[in-house]
Amino acid sequence: MSTRLIHVWAPGIRQGSGGIQAFSRDAVRALLAAYPGARLHVHVKNDAPCEDDPLFSERVTWSSSRAFPGVLRTLHFALAGILRALLTRPRLVLSTHVNFLPAVHLLKPGACRTAVVLHGIDAWNLRAGAKLRALRKTDAVISVSRFTRDQVAKLPGMEGSRMFVLPNTFQTGAFQPGPKPEALLERHGLNAEQPVLLTVSRLEESERYKGHQEVIECLPELRKEFPGLRYVIAGRGGYAAELKRRVAEHGLEEAVIFAGFVPNSELADYYRLCDVFVMPSRGEGFGIVFLEAIACGKPVVAGNADGSADAVDQGRLGVLVNPQSREELTEALRSLLSGTHSNRLLFEPAKLHEEVVAQFGPEAFRRRLKAILDEIWS
Image 1 (cartoon, helix red, strand yellow):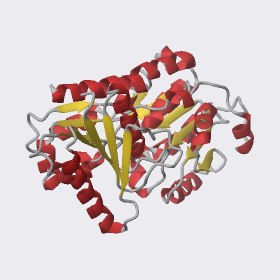
Image 2 (spheres, rainbow, N blue to C red; image 1 turned 60 degrees about the vertical axis):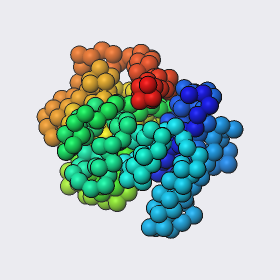
Image 3 (cartoon, rainbow, N blue to C red; image 1 turned 90 degrees about the horizontal axis):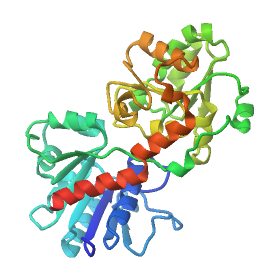
């Protein structure tokens, strides 16, 4: 494998721009580490790396379709990717998004292997069409969670497909346990003794499933026992207006803090600000934010109805709840805020950090990806 070429097709690659972009970056790093003599070509649809991006390497070449508008961008991305693959004959084309599969599938009569990464709801609901036909013929169908793998395995014609699970990773050095940061306490009018809940996500209408409303519904009951409780909602988007209306309906304006967009430089400090990270979602493909919060030594509450369960190792590294049960969610938050939950690991910040790095750190990601590719190349 040492002298072979690998193509990576990605929707985006810039640091800090989203979960699939982060996965794409992690895949490039892992491939370079797993196969020291291999060369990579990264073909990006919507952006391009910055000039000082640490991903730049003499072993990596780049192309991008970002200069083209709308439909022309999609057409250029597909045609340029196919042409380059036909000319350079890579051993593998790895697509980090299911939308690229029909174009990637056109390369199958050649000698290269193909692999696709499935992240969540985009793959769960395939029922027919070019994407599903291409998915059936792909050499490796890689899901970021067991939930996504199991949903895709139910799709028509997927029997016998080579399916694998490759959980997301995260940048372990950026997320460490530590005290509540004074700057954020002052910014949001808090004191270090106040209990704080936190959710970090985009606040778009399409992501209403994250569970913000469900947490808000729990606050009146929780504040009877924890009167100083604050709920920090970090993120921006059109859904914020509805959440603010819900907060006003419950008279919780004092208890809920809308922090707005949080830059990467402050993200770890926001995790350290909270006592519990909570995101009881119903449609999460995985949830890198859980890994980041756990790495900062915080107990987390996640929904048990989607890929979130994988991010907390099926409940070993966090608390899983039925996201539609207010009673269950309230009790989980109460037990964590009071320190009475039976999983004592959740109250050991240094140990939590150690465990999440061992399970989901870059080295674990590299080993899993290499094992998958070695199997399809064998």
